[in-house]
Length: 97
Image (cartoon, rainbow, N blue to C red; front, side, top):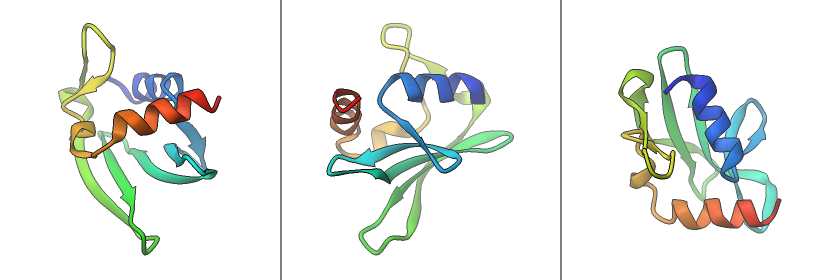
């Protein structure tokens, strides 16, 4: 998948642009990001905000190795599965739109 395809998928699935990054906001604070995608020139990093406020990288992958699930379109091999509760966060974000 390309940078643009990942951005399009994220925005269609509850992610919001906060700053320059596609982010999943906190359910109780929609302007604060909890998870973000750093879209770089050759790949993407997934980061989570820790309670201390620091961002921590939880996954990263080259665009060449990320592909969409044929059934759902969700990016596979990007590391989303490493984030506990990501599906619930995305569902809450979609319902708040």
